[in-house]
Structure formats: structure tokens, C-alpha cells
Length: 145
Image (cartoon, rainbow, N blue to C red; front, top):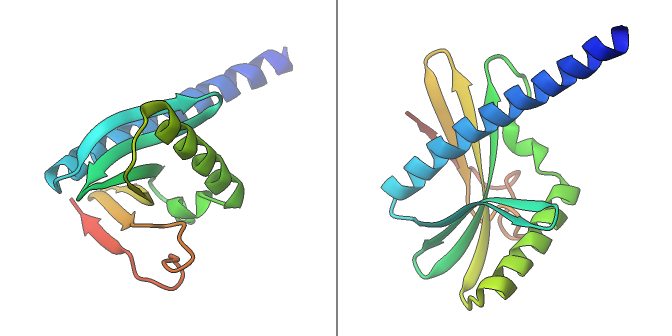
């Protein structure tokens, strides 16, 4: 009987996590559109790898990874994009370019969404995986709305 409760709990937790993630992605899509980004795709899949948002901005293809946290979580959502996740995103981006036959410069951004009781905070880290533009060395833009 204990195993059934554990399984149900983990399914419920996963569903809640997915719902929260979708909320963050929708907020980011709206924000990107207001900033002049043209949203081409959302939740694009390449085998088992997903690109949250694909946009075009200033003649550049921008792949956006969205990380969302709620409430009192003490870590920063953007730190969830580790080296393994970066490799996975690179593979998916290469497949996207191949499938869509697009020949544009490419950038990969992270946008972290932190929900607080007083509202949302967005942290946009452009060109997040570039060796010349690392989050630790550059101050990303913090946006509140």
C-alpha cells in the first residue's frame, strides 16, 4: 500500500512541476514578444530533447531555455542549466537548424522566472553558454513585472 501512495505522490509532483514550468514559459513568451522577438516555436522536440522557445531577433535565431521557480526556493533557477543540459540543448539546436534549413547566426539564452508573493521576476541571460559571456562574469538583466 505504501508503494502506491509514493507512486501517486511522485506523479502529482511531476504534474505540478510541469504546470509551473508551462506558466513560466507563457510569461517568457509574452515578455519576448513585447521586446520585439518573433516566436517561431515553443516546446520543440528532437527525439527526447526539448527546446522551450525558439525565436528570431535582429536577424539571429535565439534558443531560449526557461527555468521557473516558485516561492521560497533558495537556489537560482538558472543554475539548473548544467553542462549536461547545455549539451542536450546544443544537440537539439543543431537538429532544429538541420530540420528547418535555417542559416542564421545562433544564440542560446536562459530566462529564469522566479514567482514571489509580490509578482514575477525575470532574469534574462543572453548568450548564456558562450565562453565569452558567462553568467558568473557578466551581470544579466533583472526584470520585475
